Each structure stands twice: as structure tokens, then as C-alpha cells.
Length: 65
Image (cartoon, rainbow, N blue to C red; front, side):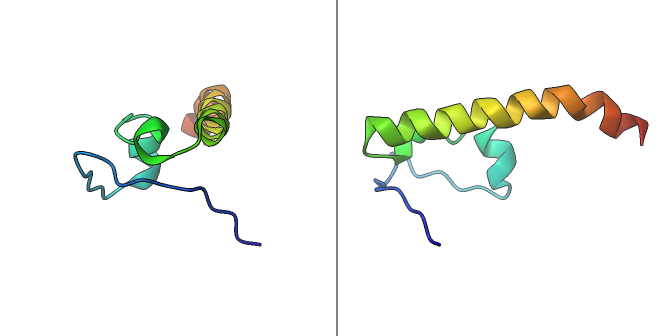
């Protein structure tokens, strides 16, 4: 199953070597700069929040391994 969002070209264009870092910790990829529809922006922001909350919850466990 392929799910895609309607996107726009960001201004200025952003180049990245680490998509996940730039989307989460780095904060360089802002969904509002890439997505057309507000509903999609909110959905992606909610997903980022969920992933960051999960990361924060398990970070200590990962460091202990």
C-alpha cells in the first residue's frame, strides 16, 4: 500500500543526509513547508510528537543496553 501526501516545493530547498534527524530532533523539516493540506500537516506533526514521546520513554533503556 502506497500512501502519499500532496506536497509543495519548499522555499528555500532543504538538502539532508539524515531525514529522521531533520524531521525530529533537528527540526529542519517542517511539515507546513512541504505539505499542502492542513489536515496532512496536523497528521504528520502528531506522528512526530508520538515518535518523540516514544523515543524519550525508551532512551534510558537504549543507553543501558
